[in-house]
Structure formats: C-alpha cells, structure tokens
Length: 265
Length: 282
Image (cartoon, rainbow over all chains, first blue to last red):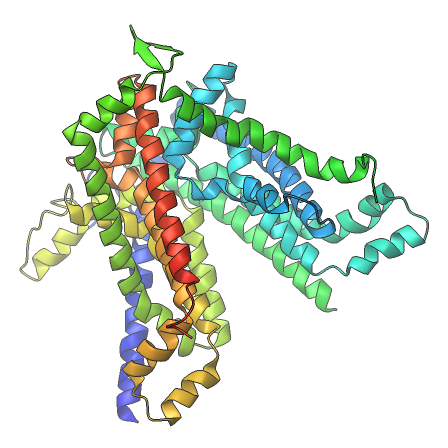
C-alpha cells in the first residue's frame, strides 16, 4: 500500500498549496505592513512601524474609521431586524406568494455589487437620499439582511414549534410568547447575525464608494490610496480591517457554537 | 375561513416587503427606466428614447468588452473548478470530519477580509520587481510580466472565488453516500473511473452551483481586471465604472448593467435547468 501512501502525501501537499494561494495575500499584507521598503520585495527590508505611525497621524483615516463604525453598527441593527422578521414569518406562516416573498430578501447578494451600486446611486439621488452616511446604511441593510435571515432561520429550525403554542396555552398572548419564548431562544443567533452583518458591511466598498459622496468609509479610503500609487499604508490599514473583521467573525462563530452546546445539554 | 387583518402576522411580514421594494426593487426598476433617459449638457433628463441602447449596441468596444468579460470569467471559472477539485476531493474523502470542519472554517476567513487589501497584496507580489519574480530569480528564471495581463486578472478572480468553490465542492462531495463508492470499487471500478462515473454525477448539482457562483462573482468584479489586469481590455464592470464616474453617462451605464443582468439570468437559468435535468446522472 506504498502507492496509496504516496498518493495521500501528494494530495495533502496539493491542499497545502491551495491554502497557501488563498492565504498568501493576507499573510504578505501583514508582513509588508512592518516592512520598511516602499516597494516590498525579497529580501525584505528592515522592521518598521512607520506605516502604522503614518495612518495614526492621518485625520482622514480616523474620520473614515468612525464613518465605517457608524455604518456597520447601524447596518447590522437594521439588517438583523429585517432578517429576524423574515426568518420568523417563514418559520411560522404559510401564505400566498411566500416564494416571491423569500426571493425578495434572498436575491440581493446574487446581483453584482457594481450593478447594485449604480442602481442605488441613481435611485437614491432621485429620492434626494444620496451623498450621506446613511445612504450607505440603507443600501447595506438590503445587501446584508439575507445573511441575518439565514442565521436566524437556522436557529428557528431547532425550535420545537410546540414551544410557542405551549406559551399561548399557558395564557400568553402572541406578543408575550414572542418576547419571552422566541426572542430569548433566538438570542445567540441574533448576536451572531449582528456580528456577521457588521463584518460584511465593514468590508463592502463598491456600493459605499458610489452612494456616499464625500463621506468615505475605510474601504473607500483604501480604494483611493490604491488608485494613486503603491503605498504600504494600505497594508497597515488592511491589518486593522482584518483584525476588526476577524473579531466579528470569531464572535459570530462563538455564539453559533455556544448555541449548539446549549441545545445539546 | 375568512380572516381579518392579523396585526401580529403583518408586523413581521410587512417591514421587509416595504423595505425591499423601496431599496431593492425600486433601484433596479429605476435603473431600467434611466436607460431610456437622455443626457443633455451633463444633466440627465427624463425621457423615453432608445438612443442609449442604439449608441451602446452600435459601439464596437461595447461588444469587445462583452465577449471579453464572458471569456475571462469563463476561463476563471474553469480554472477555479479544476484547481479546487483535487483539494476538495482530499478534504471530502481523505480528511477526518474534524479536519474538514477546520478547513472549512479557515476557508470562510477570506470572505471577511478586505478583497481590496488582498488585491493590493497580489499587486505587490506579482509586480515586475515583486516578491514572486524575486523568488524566481533565485531559481534563475524570469522576470515574468504578470501584472496587466490576463494572468493577473485571473489571479484576482481566483482570490475572490477559489475559497467558495473549494467549500462548495467539499461539502457536496462529503455528502455523497460512501457506500455507493465502495460498491463501485467492489464491483471492480477503477479509482479514476469511480470519480468520473459515481462521485461526479452524484455531485452534479453542487458543482454546477459552485461554477455558477464563481462565474457570477468573476463576471461582476471590477477590482481584479482594473488593478491586476490593467484594464487594457475593459470588462463590463469597468465600463460601468468609467461611464458613471467620469462621464456622468448614467443612462449608458444602465444599459451595460441591464445587459449584464440579462446575461447572468440566462446563464443562471441554463445552469439550474442543467443541474436538475433528469436522466443520465441517475
């Protein structure tokens, strides 16, 4: 069975290569952010925190960071609310046009962002809503709500539908059952959805760039720096973006897992 | 039973309908409308004329761009599906459940890291005097021109799509009934023939979905062809970008966007029909 062993080693190496390709840009960006060369190559230059010092001293970056934070927090709240409503409607009710209803919320991520960006820009300018920070929030809530819907719907799948009717039988109104049974049951997935939609919104650049006017978010600042020339500041900003997104994703995952542990006990 | 207005049910059902019509259906329909508007003195005027459609369809560069975008997105989809297959196969059949779960968790990470930063990173890696050429120089090779080529564009697309394709292929193949594979082997089917005649037909739907997503993502991306491909041959998204941002020609950009949507819908329907076609596979 030496041949099988050999084959397994080759396949494992191949998987490693694919992962290397996928993670190379992330790792290199991290390394370059501490590298003194303006145009990084091998051998690497000296260790430096120059690029970090630069972005910390740049007021534009601070403004963008605050804008991004505002946008992703507000987006996550709106999107999670919409996602929850849809997930609950889908879980609890059967109604006419349910198919189109679900399509309405689930379709946005399949449409190329550049097209959404153009359509949003034209429509929001027509309504007089473009060029503000909250223009981005409106657009992002549509783009990210499906993710919230999916996570919360998965959680509701694990709920015994009798739980809700038991609450009604015990004299609770539908509203009370929602407050005391459904929402507590969904809480981990709601927090998870908040984190995930915030992370998606935090990284989105095409729509933000089109509709935000002069209110730049972090990805838009990156886009503009990259358009200019090679500037390792991008790597330093990228490291922060990466850390923020990763924190959110890991938090989402933690809540996802804590949910499973609880439901097993 | 005739029911009167159920406030509780509607509280959960109506917000999203209202919201999505206002900020999803509305924008898309309005985009169709503005494709018939006219631009005079840099101002968009409401009208119903086919002038934008005629203008765009009569331009050679529009069709060049159209076919190039389909071609390069198709190439990237093919490359992604082929490159991902051995890795997904290994993860699906030769890895423990635990390892596979970790691998999938790792593959989700790139979705939440800035695609722009990753593209910029590739820009530096692939540059004439960049990291990759420096490494190749130690081997006495190169330098190769990798930026501003089709190769650069495809690397960018793969950065975006490869993790997704590996995940979808792995999940699809991992759910194939293992006993069927053993049965095929016991009946004397060779390993490669087993893949071709058992594993692939059983994973058809998942694979088509993976390819479709890969195509949609590549087709609609402007970052890779712009920064890594040098946009010498502009793809449709770059065309939209240029006409919107520099020319103020929103109506013409809308024409390009509608053509893109129509193309994607056609391809998606064809793919779904193919995925659920009866016979052959079963």
